[in-house]
Amino acid sequence: MTYILPSHQATPYMFGIGLGYLLHKNNNKIHIPKYLVYGGWLSATYLIYLSFFSMSEVFSLEYQYDAVRMSLYYALSPIALSLALCWVILACATGHG
Image (tube, rainbow, N blue to C red; front, side):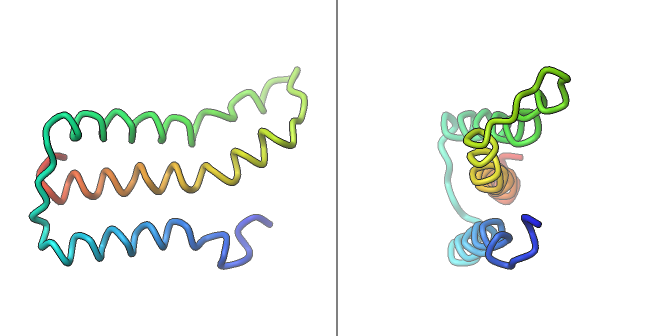
């Protein structure tokens, strides 16, 4: 029931619209220094890893439900994954893919 309301899906859409607007206004001519390219790729990789694998202990037989951890995961995971995918799109659009 987490994705029934459109407001729960608004985060990825807003990140995508914002990135599309940024790329459109700058005609894909954004200069990114090399250290930011490396940092962006490391951050994007880490955020994707956290989004997909941070709750892998849920499948353990000894897992105890923790409402705070689960609510933090469900609140922050779409933001982390959206930021990571925006970096991938921005890096590829500017020739750093």
